[in-house]
Length: 350
Image 1 (tube, helix red, strand yellow):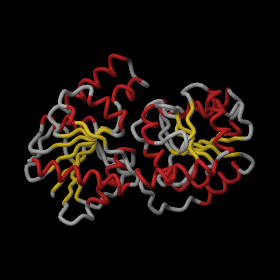
Image 2 (tube, rainbow, N blue to C red):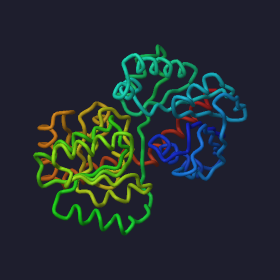
Image 3 (cartoon, helix red, strand yellow):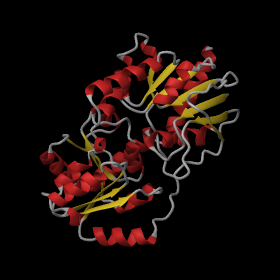
Image 4 (cartoon, rainbow, N blue to C red):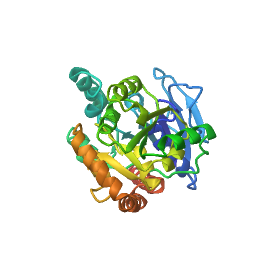
């Protein structure tokens, strides 16, 4: 079985992390050959796939006829494989619900345009893999041939992380020593909803917030913390490549997004056996139940503070429940097993 994966870049970002885990375990299966194709070059913060990787131009053509399967991840890879289908079997994994993701930061017209363009690029795919039942229903609504869309949940297995640098460890330990620590490790963009956690600190005097990550929305969060007089209980540490190593320092992990697929950060927190506060959106309910995480209503700070207090008082129950569910459904090994069965079934059909 020879598989070509196409990705925008090799950067250490959510969808690429999923791809990295997929490749890491697939290449251990006897008879599987893998090659990565990517568009954008970055010098730093890239993942080592330990297979052949080739940079290609979006405007050039590649001959994929020697591959059994071409598997694309992202808008440009999906468009590329629409106009450059030289392999009998093409698959796309959709790491988002298109319109929901784009409308947070863009106009309705732009969001609809991207949605239509992206959906058009999926028309020639043999299979579209959605992440979760909510996403599956979204994509199936656009295709008359509904068996084209299947659900394979993301999976994530935490490997041995690098140690936290001594300087960071001292800083965070001193910062959190008098508080219950709410923490998260995500990109700092508006869609992630971090502002809600900062707003909740006004009432939650015994709590602090640690954000590991960087992004375009960081200045606004810092200004909000200053306006609400909670700056002394907010630590914006910036980007760290080994972010999962910091999970052990958090009492509560926050997943406060307005829109998601199955969040990699959420699965990492579950894998680390963390108590999780979670925005009440359909995609998150695809993953965990009320017994496993504490849900709150988006932009309802009273709901959020109540959920955090409940989570804090029942921390160990939530930690055990979410970890049990994670082990059953959301390891990288489970994800790869599902993809491998898909690949075999498509090759058999052809």
